[in-house]
Each structure stands twice: as C-alpha cells, then as structure tokens.
Length: 243
Ligand SMILES: Nc1ncnc2c1ncn2[C@@H]1O[C@H](COP(=O)(O)OP(=O)(O)OP(=O)(O)O)[C@@H](O)[C@H]1O
Image (cartoon, rainbow, N blue to C red):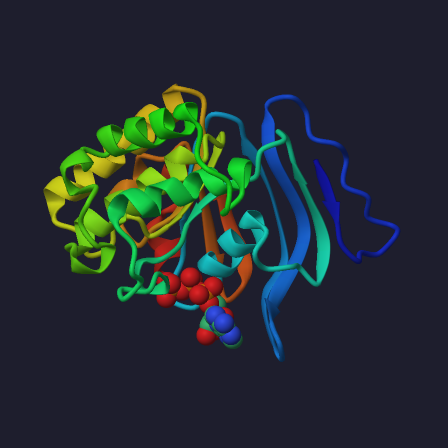
C-alpha cells in the first residue's frame, strides 16, 4: 500500500524491500497553524519492536497518528505493506472514561473494520473477541463498564480491542504509562510475544528500560528525528541530555 502526499518531485522514495513493513520519508505533519513533524524519515522492519522516544511535545503521538492514518501529513511519503489497516491504541487520556461501553463491547469494536458497526458479529468474530479477552486475561471483566475499571484494566481492554483487529501492525501510545511494575511487565511480555508471532509493534514510551529492549529506537526532538537504530546507540547520555 502506498500513500503519497505533496512532495518535491525530485525526492522519490524507493520502494521498500520485503523485510520492510513501513517506510516513511520526509514526512511533515501537524495541526492547523502548528507544524510538528519536520522531514521525518525511517524504515521499520517487519516483525520488529520499535520504541518511539523523546520529550513531551516532541511529536511521538503525532507520528503514531500519521502511521495510524488518523492524521494526514502535509507532505512526504508513507508506504506500508499489508492490506489490513494498523491497530492503534491511543494514549490513555485520549479515550473517554465516561463511554457507556462494556469491556466486551469495547473489544467487539475491534471487529468493526471487517464487519461494520451495524452488522451482527459472526461466530468467528465472537471467537476472535473471546481469544483477545483471554489473551489479556480480562475475560472476567467482559460485562463491566469501561469507565469503572482501573487504568491498567482499561489499558488491557484497549489492547484487546487492537488484537481483535487481527492486524499485523500494532501502534501503541504509551501503553504502560501509569501502570504498576507487574502490569508493565506483563504488557511488555505480551508485546514481545506478538512480535515473535508475526506482528510489527511500534510503541511510544517514556520508559527507557522498555525502549532499551526494543529492536530499534526512534528519537524525536522538537519534531525532528535525531536518532534511529539500535537502542544502545540511540539512547546515549549525550542524546538524552538533549532530549
Ligand atoms: N490536537 C492538537 N492540536 C494542536 N496542537 C497539538 C494537538 N495535539 C498535539 N499538539 C501539539 O503538537 C506537539 C506534539 O505533540 P505530541 O502529542 O505529538 O507530542 P508527544 O511527543 O507525544 O508528547 P507526550 O510525550 O507529552 O505525549 C505539541 O506541541 C502539542 O502541543
């Protein structure tokens, strides 16, 4: 799949090879009157874990929004392999606490991309939803209202919704922020397992320990990509001092 935006004709992005899941080049994006991402380029390999790091306001959520297709770049190229849209888990605060939805209904929404919001779910859809609930160990929470859950429980429900989409590309915005160490570790382990099972995972994180376990780190500073590659090489004291 290729999505092209306005770009100078002299800078064509070469097609990605088969090991690349996403390639973006010279991406610029932001909000009305507020440019954020400035000429951001990277290749994300298939079946890899990428950590998106950088200070508050550096553009991590904006980049995830662009990769998820919810923010339209103002220029640049974005190429993505695979036919299924990415599954996107936004930052905790971005999901309304007062939504009158049960956990099961929340996870069922992950099937809407295939089924549409008004069609009855098939037996296979229900199987996929149950498997996602089980995978996040929240089957017992299925009848509970989303708004009455703890932060960690709600985060599990949102990740289960993403799994129910059966996408091979998972985008998560600070999935473990505010969670206790045990919850952080179990979500981290799950994400690593998903990569070994075939998924490509990109997560924004402020947790440097998590970032150091990723295959690749992208360091954003003021909308510029100032480092990318092996976490040990990107997360240096000097680089972080500037972050
Ligand atoms: N909806 C919006 N409208 C206008 N400006 C926005 C909007 N969302 C974010 N911004 C601005 O865009 C810039 C980048 O924000 P973004 O949320 O991408 O940063 P971030 O790196 O994810 O930050 P954090 O670590 O705090 O989550 C910030 O200056 C922010 O104020």
